Length: 140
Image (cartoon, rainbow, N blue to C red; front, side, top):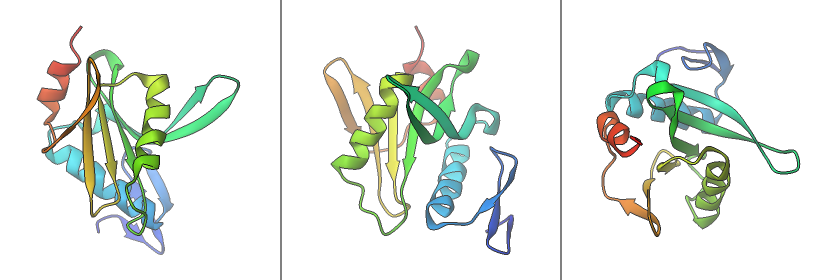
């Protein structure tokens, strides 16, 4: 993997070397998947700090932004040996209580689920939207 040295990997979103943990490997892989779907690197951030309610602090693995810096997708990454379960979805939904995005991506590097917000909740998609499709979903 490009950018790996001595147990560290360069995170292009944070612009620094970070420890190469199994979850970080998944995060870096998914950043490349997003780039392949047309997401400009400058429209993504990793380890985004969120605060909700009475000082509850969380960090979203990756947030994808649209025009004007409006968040439009949350990516929750897990280590490859962690199942992508309902609890992972609930974690992403907690983050979304703060960000209010139309797309959620849940991945462990082996299995990826993609959800899109609907009027009635969320629907699972059978393919990942490209960036232009996500932008259309986010127009006011």
